[in-house]
Length: 483
Image (tube, rainbow, N blue to C red):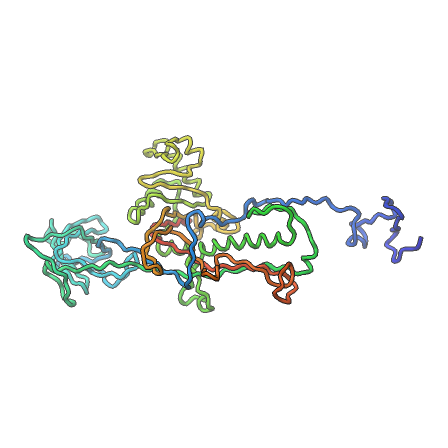
């Protein structure tokens, strides 16, 4: 037998497969430790799912819908309030004059105008609780001054000078009177027969889609080195995968981005660096509710009074009977504890109609549904608010502890169709046409893995979507924020 050259210590090959001291490759000591090893390590093929289901999407599938669009912008219109009311008025008691802040912006975004006519009856209130009922004797559409005659007092001196609220509740006219629409100039109206005709207005909102992209790249050389792993992924894929395991997780992460982008999206404000750099952004759920909805700071699910304050506010809005609560774990447990205390009867008890009126059944289900006042609530944990890699890692004033979403549909005017239609309060609009569907696109490029589109010695898996979220009637939503 010849001599092995170079000689690695005292290692001598054997003519047969025998475990001898002279042919044992010791990999953990000496210069040969990085070269080879005698025995392969014991390998667990199956991947350990130590984080459980890691995907976060699904919220919008529960409460919304997806619809195609063909434009760079989606526009919708929402009704304004029906009755005439003003806040922040001034009171000049010596002249019985109530000043409406015309030219300002109302809570619904519309321009404040004086549309109160002589002969109408109004209720006047201030922040201290004083109240007067009066009839309007004169009105100035331009300046906003309204002259009133109180029913129970000589003047309006019992009211504060500022912060007066006023709303119209009816009118009073004499026998045989008639009404004509006032069409004068900027002068004051003092004749009860002259009436300011009110044209209904609506508030218009819009949002723009953003393009969301991602890709995964694997070079041709690595594709030829197969490493098998048995997996069971969140999208239902199971079995043995190699490099496509990473592609599968890239796809799952991108599908989460599709929802996270329209939940967290922010419009680029004037003067912002993003706008300067050519980015426009999109208004997501949190931004829309903060801008046009209700924000409850330092909400305590353990305090029934805090919850009842929300109900009182909902009464001033759309008063939608069925609502869904998507909460983080802490707030959800607080509400469970609060309901458990109420169920003892200490605060009047509660109804369990959703659970065949069985308190025991409701407790066992963790209060997934309950009724308070005239409202039904369906409560669930929102994983996005609990996950340590997303909102679950944020505490304090910046934390979002939950969101109240009205159930059902809303009637809106569609600018494209030119008619009133019913749609969910939350829905996603994505770009699509007969030849191009950008809801969720994926394609292969490169020269490996079956793709032959370029000279790149790799396979690229590309993902793209173009979408935005439409939040209609945001005044019925509530965003719960931390302390």
